[in-house]
Image (cartoon, rainbow over all chains, first blue to last red; front, side, top):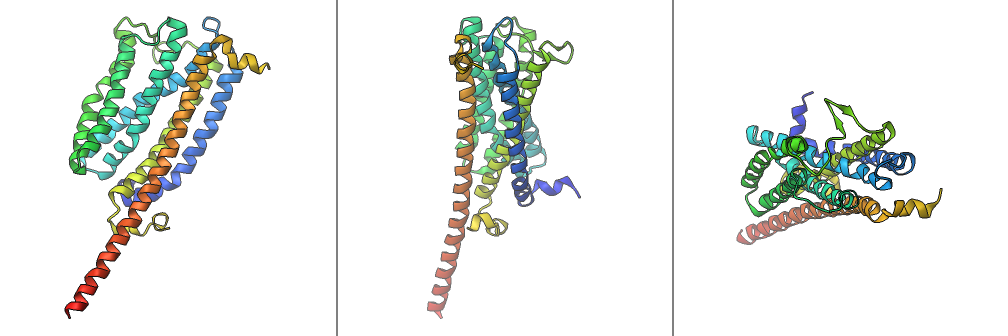
Length: 244
Length: 67
Protein backbone atom coordinates (compact mmCIF):
# COMPACT_ATOMS: atom_id res chain seq x y z
CA UNK A 1 0.00 0.00 0.00
CA UNK A 2 1.40 3.36 -0.98
CA UNK A 3 1.21 6.43 1.25
CA UNK A 4 0.58 8.45 -1.90
CA UNK A 5 -2.84 6.85 -1.87
CA UNK A 6 -3.70 9.36 0.87
CA UNK A 7 -2.51 12.40 -1.07
CA UNK A 8 -5.95 12.61 -2.73
CA UNK A 9 -8.65 14.51 -0.78
CA UNK A 10 -11.16 11.67 -1.33
CA UNK A 11 -8.97 9.10 0.45
CA UNK A 12 -7.51 11.50 3.02
CA UNK A 13 -10.92 12.77 4.21
CA UNK A 14 -12.05 9.49 5.86
CA UNK A 15 -8.52 8.77 7.17
CA UNK A 16 -8.39 12.21 8.84
CA UNK A 17 -11.81 11.54 10.37
CA UNK A 18 -10.51 8.34 11.94
CA UNK A 19 -7.31 9.98 13.25
CA UNK A 20 -8.89 13.07 14.89
CA UNK A 21 -10.34 11.29 17.98
CA UNK A 22 -7.01 9.53 18.66
CA UNK A 23 -4.92 12.70 18.46
CA UNK A 24 -7.59 14.68 20.31
CA UNK A 25 -7.71 12.20 23.19
CA UNK A 26 -3.90 12.02 23.35
CA UNK A 27 -3.72 15.82 23.47
CA UNK A 28 -6.28 16.01 26.28
CA UNK A 29 -4.62 13.30 28.41
CA UNK A 30 -1.14 14.78 27.90
CA UNK A 31 -2.40 18.30 28.70
CA UNK A 32 -3.97 17.08 31.98
CA UNK A 33 -0.70 15.30 32.95
CA UNK A 34 1.42 18.28 31.86
CA UNK A 35 -0.69 20.83 33.74
CA UNK A 36 -0.71 18.62 36.85
CA UNK A 37 3.08 18.24 36.76
CA UNK A 38 3.62 21.91 35.98
CA UNK A 39 1.23 23.41 38.52
CA UNK A 40 1.24 20.88 41.37
CA UNK A 41 4.36 18.71 41.24
CA UNK A 42 7.15 20.97 39.93
CA UNK A 43 8.68 23.00 42.80
CA UNK A 44 9.07 26.78 42.96
CA UNK A 45 12.07 28.15 41.06
CA UNK A 46 14.80 29.40 43.42
CA UNK A 47 15.38 32.57 41.39
CA UNK A 48 12.01 33.47 39.85
CA UNK A 49 9.60 31.98 42.39
CA UNK A 50 6.16 30.90 41.13
CA UNK A 51 6.03 33.09 38.02
CA UNK A 52 8.42 30.76 36.17
CA UNK A 53 5.43 28.36 35.69
CA UNK A 54 4.56 30.41 32.60
CA UNK A 55 7.36 28.36 30.97
CA UNK A 56 4.98 25.38 30.74
CA UNK A 57 2.82 27.37 28.30
CA UNK A 58 5.35 29.78 26.80
CA UNK A 59 7.98 27.32 25.55
CA UNK A 60 5.54 24.74 24.06
CA UNK A 61 3.58 27.46 22.26
CA UNK A 62 6.80 29.06 20.94
CA UNK A 63 8.06 25.68 19.71
CA UNK A 64 4.72 24.96 18.01
CA UNK A 65 4.75 28.40 16.36
CA UNK A 66 8.05 27.54 14.65
CA UNK A 67 7.33 23.86 14.01
CA UNK A 68 3.96 24.51 12.34
CA UNK A 69 5.56 27.07 10.04
CA UNK A 70 8.25 24.55 9.05
CA UNK A 71 5.59 21.90 8.38
CA UNK A 72 3.74 24.47 6.24
CA UNK A 73 6.98 25.12 4.34
CA UNK A 74 7.27 21.37 3.68
CA UNK A 75 3.72 21.32 2.31
CA UNK A 76 4.54 24.45 0.27
CA UNK A 77 7.38 22.57 -1.46
CA UNK A 78 5.04 19.65 -2.21
CA UNK A 79 2.32 22.01 -3.45
CA UNK A 80 4.74 23.76 -5.80
CA UNK A 81 6.67 20.71 -7.01
CA UNK A 82 3.99 18.00 -7.17
CA UNK A 83 0.96 20.34 -7.52
CA UNK A 84 -0.92 18.25 -4.94
CA UNK A 85 -4.22 19.82 -3.92
CA UNK A 86 -4.06 18.32 -0.43
CA UNK A 87 -0.71 20.00 0.38
CA UNK A 88 -2.22 23.42 -0.20
CA UNK A 89 -5.26 22.45 1.85
CA UNK A 90 -3.01 21.32 4.73
CA UNK A 91 -1.17 24.65 4.61
CA UNK A 92 -4.49 26.46 4.87
CA UNK A 93 -5.55 24.18 7.74
CA UNK A 94 -2.34 24.68 9.73
CA UNK A 95 -1.99 28.46 9.40
CA UNK A 96 -4.67 29.57 11.93
CA UNK A 97 -3.31 27.19 14.58
CA UNK A 98 0.24 28.39 13.91
CA UNK A 99 -0.88 32.01 14.18
CA UNK A 100 -2.69 31.23 17.45
CA UNK A 101 0.39 29.59 18.98
CA UNK A 102 2.59 32.51 17.85
CA UNK A 103 0.19 35.02 19.41
CA UNK A 104 0.14 32.92 22.60
CA UNK A 105 3.95 32.75 22.69
CA UNK A 106 4.11 36.56 22.41
CA UNK A 107 1.33 37.07 24.98
CA UNK A 108 2.79 34.68 27.57
CA UNK A 109 6.26 36.06 26.88
CA UNK A 110 5.00 39.57 27.62
CA UNK A 111 3.33 38.39 30.84
CA UNK A 112 6.53 36.64 31.88
CA UNK A 113 8.74 39.55 30.84
CA UNK A 114 7.01 42.16 33.04
CA UNK A 115 7.77 40.56 36.44
CA UNK A 116 11.21 39.21 35.44
CA UNK A 117 12.68 41.90 33.13
CA UNK A 118 10.48 44.82 34.15
CA UNK A 119 8.90 45.23 30.71
CA UNK A 120 6.15 43.60 28.66
CA UNK A 121 7.95 44.19 25.39
CA UNK A 122 11.39 45.02 24.02
CA UNK A 123 12.45 45.24 20.39
CA UNK A 124 15.03 42.53 20.85
CA UNK A 125 15.89 39.98 18.16
CA UNK A 126 13.93 36.99 19.56
CA UNK A 127 10.73 38.93 20.21
CA UNK A 128 10.85 40.96 17.01
CA UNK A 129 11.48 37.90 14.81
CA UNK A 130 8.60 36.08 16.54
CA UNK A 131 6.35 39.08 15.85
CA UNK A 132 7.42 38.86 12.18
CA UNK A 133 6.41 35.18 12.26
CA UNK A 134 2.92 36.23 13.41
CA UNK A 135 2.77 38.74 10.52
CA UNK A 136 3.82 35.97 8.11
CA UNK A 137 1.00 33.72 9.33
CA UNK A 138 -1.56 36.55 9.14
CA UNK A 139 -0.17 37.61 5.75
CA UNK A 140 -0.52 34.07 4.40
CA UNK A 141 -4.13 33.78 5.65
CA UNK A 142 -5.02 37.20 4.18
CA UNK A 143 -3.33 36.39 0.86
CA UNK A 144 -5.04 33.03 0.21
CA UNK A 145 -8.41 34.52 1.17
CA UNK A 146 -7.95 37.58 -1.02
CA UNK A 147 -7.39 35.63 -4.26
CA UNK A 148 -10.58 34.08 -5.61
CA UNK A 149 -8.95 31.58 -7.97
CA UNK A 150 -7.91 28.82 -5.54
CA UNK A 151 -5.06 27.53 -7.71
CA UNK A 152 -3.45 30.96 -7.88
CA UNK A 153 -4.12 31.54 -4.18
CA UNK A 154 -2.41 28.24 -3.26
CA UNK A 155 0.61 29.04 -5.41
CA UNK A 156 1.00 32.57 -4.05
CA UNK A 157 0.52 31.29 -0.48
CA UNK A 158 3.10 28.53 -0.95
CA UNK A 159 5.65 31.04 -2.26
CA UNK A 160 5.04 33.38 0.67
CA UNK A 161 5.44 30.53 3.16
CA UNK A 162 8.67 29.36 1.51
CA UNK A 163 10.22 32.84 1.45
CA UNK A 164 9.11 33.43 5.06
CA UNK A 165 10.64 30.19 6.30
CA UNK A 166 14.03 31.95 6.46
CA UNK A 167 12.63 33.64 9.58
CA UNK A 168 12.43 30.37 11.57
CA UNK A 169 16.20 29.77 11.94
CA UNK A 170 16.54 33.51 12.64
CA UNK A 171 14.11 33.14 15.59
CA UNK A 172 15.87 30.01 16.83
CA UNK A 173 19.43 31.34 16.64
CA UNK A 174 18.61 34.98 17.47
CA UNK A 175 19.61 34.50 21.12
CA UNK A 176 23.05 33.28 19.97
CA UNK A 177 23.66 35.68 17.10
CA UNK A 178 22.64 38.86 18.92
CA UNK A 179 22.89 40.17 22.43
CA UNK A 180 19.22 39.84 23.41
CA UNK A 181 17.18 40.52 26.51
CA UNK A 182 15.60 37.10 25.97
CA UNK A 183 17.54 34.29 27.67
CA UNK A 184 19.25 31.49 25.73
CA UNK A 185 17.73 28.08 25.01
CA UNK A 186 16.75 26.02 28.06
CA UNK A 187 17.54 22.85 26.15
CA UNK A 188 20.20 22.73 23.46
CA UNK A 189 21.73 19.88 21.48
CA UNK A 190 25.28 21.07 22.24
CA UNK A 191 24.94 22.04 25.92
CA UNK A 192 22.23 19.64 27.06
CA UNK A 193 19.55 20.49 29.60
CA UNK A 194 19.82 23.34 32.13
CA UNK A 195 16.52 22.57 33.90
CA UNK A 196 15.49 20.31 36.80
CA UNK A 197 14.15 16.98 35.55
CA UNK A 198 10.58 17.47 36.82
CA UNK A 199 10.35 20.95 35.27
CA UNK A 200 11.73 19.63 31.99
CA UNK A 201 9.30 16.69 32.04
CA UNK A 202 6.29 18.98 32.58
CA UNK A 203 7.44 21.24 29.75
CA UNK A 204 8.01 18.35 27.34
CA UNK A 205 4.64 16.75 28.17
CA UNK A 206 2.92 20.10 27.53
CA UNK A 207 4.85 20.46 24.26
CA UNK A 208 3.70 16.99 23.22
CA UNK A 209 0.11 17.88 24.18
CA UNK A 210 0.29 21.01 21.99
CA UNK A 211 1.73 18.92 19.17
CA UNK A 212 -1.06 16.34 19.34
CA UNK A 213 -3.65 19.13 19.61
CA UNK A 214 -2.24 20.83 16.50
CA UNK A 215 -2.50 17.59 14.53
CA UNK A 216 -6.08 16.94 15.73
CA UNK A 217 -7.36 20.46 15.07
CA UNK A 218 -5.64 20.82 11.69
CA UNK A 219 -7.00 17.44 10.55
CA UNK A 220 -10.47 18.63 11.61
CA UNK A 221 -10.01 21.90 9.73
CA UNK A 222 -8.67 20.23 6.60
CA UNK A 223 -11.81 18.07 6.50
CA UNK A 224 -13.89 21.27 6.42
CA UNK A 225 -11.62 22.73 3.71
CA UNK A 226 -11.96 19.55 1.63
CA UNK A 227 -15.76 19.78 1.85
CA UNK A 228 -15.69 23.49 0.96
CA UNK A 229 -13.47 23.04 -2.07
CA UNK A 230 -14.80 19.70 -3.36
CA UNK A 231 -18.50 20.17 -2.68
CA UNK A 232 -19.37 19.83 -6.37
CA UNK A 233 -17.66 16.44 -6.71
CA UNK A 234 -19.55 13.16 -6.65
CA UNK A 235 -17.54 11.54 -3.86
CA UNK A 236 -18.38 14.41 -1.48
CA UNK A 237 -22.11 13.98 -2.25
CA UNK A 238 -21.82 10.36 -1.07
CA UNK A 239 -20.38 11.27 2.34
CA UNK A 240 -22.92 10.37 5.02
CA UNK A 241 -22.14 13.23 7.46
CA UNK A 242 -22.71 15.79 4.70
CA UNK A 243 -26.07 14.30 3.75
CA UNK A 244 -27.76 14.26 7.17
CA UNK B 1 -2.59 22.59 50.16
CA UNK B 2 -3.66 26.21 50.57
CA UNK B 3 -5.76 27.22 47.54
CA UNK B 4 -5.53 30.95 48.25
CA UNK B 5 -1.72 30.69 48.14
CA UNK B 6 -1.91 28.55 45.02
CA UNK B 7 -4.04 31.09 43.16
CA UNK B 8 -2.00 34.07 44.35
CA UNK B 9 1.22 32.51 42.94
CA UNK B 10 3.43 34.61 45.22
CA UNK B 11 1.49 37.71 44.20
CA UNK B 12 2.19 36.99 40.51
CA UNK B 13 -1.21 35.36 39.86
CA UNK B 14 -2.13 37.93 37.19
CA UNK B 15 0.86 36.94 35.05
CA UNK B 16 0.63 33.18 35.62
CA UNK B 17 -3.17 32.85 35.26
CA UNK B 18 -3.18 35.42 32.47
CA UNK B 19 -0.95 33.02 30.54
CA UNK B 20 -2.71 29.75 31.39
CA UNK B 21 -6.13 31.38 30.95
CA UNK B 22 -5.26 32.79 27.51
CA UNK B 23 -3.97 29.37 26.46
CA UNK B 24 -7.18 27.57 27.50
CA UNK B 25 -9.40 30.32 26.07
CA UNK B 26 -7.65 30.30 22.67
CA UNK B 27 -7.83 26.52 22.39
CA UNK B 28 -11.52 26.45 23.40
CA UNK B 29 -12.38 29.20 20.89
CA UNK B 30 -10.44 27.43 18.14
CA UNK B 31 -12.24 24.13 18.76
CA UNK B 32 -15.65 25.90 18.60
CA UNK B 33 -14.67 27.76 15.40
CA UNK B 34 -13.48 24.56 13.70
CA UNK B 35 -16.73 22.75 14.65
CA UNK B 36 -18.76 25.67 13.26
CA UNK B 37 -16.69 25.59 10.05
CA UNK B 38 -17.30 21.85 9.60
CA UNK B 39 -21.05 22.39 10.14
CA UNK B 40 -21.08 25.22 7.57
CA UNK B 41 -19.09 23.11 5.07
CA UNK B 42 -21.54 20.21 5.43
CA UNK B 43 -24.45 22.62 4.91
CA UNK B 44 -22.64 23.92 1.81
CA UNK B 45 -22.45 20.39 0.39
CA UNK B 46 -26.19 19.81 1.01
CA UNK B 47 -27.12 23.16 -0.55
CA UNK B 48 -24.94 22.51 -3.61
CA UNK B 49 -26.57 19.08 -4.04
CA UNK B 50 -30.09 20.55 -3.62
CA UNK B 51 -29.37 23.31 -6.15
CA UNK B 52 -28.14 20.74 -8.65
CA UNK B 53 -31.22 18.55 -8.09
CA UNK B 54 -33.51 21.57 -8.57
CA UNK B 55 -31.80 22.58 -11.80
CA UNK B 56 -32.01 18.99 -13.09
CA UNK B 57 -35.77 18.92 -12.34
CA UNK B 58 -36.21 22.30 -14.05
CA UNK B 59 -34.28 21.06 -17.12
CA UNK B 60 -36.52 17.97 -17.30
CA UNK B 61 -39.65 20.14 -17.15
CA UNK B 62 -38.33 22.34 -19.94
CA UNK B 63 -37.57 19.25 -22.00
CA UNK B 64 -41.05 17.79 -21.39
CA UNK B 65 -42.76 21.10 -22.21
CA UNK B 66 -40.73 21.28 -25.43
CA UNK B 67 -41.92 17.84 -26.51
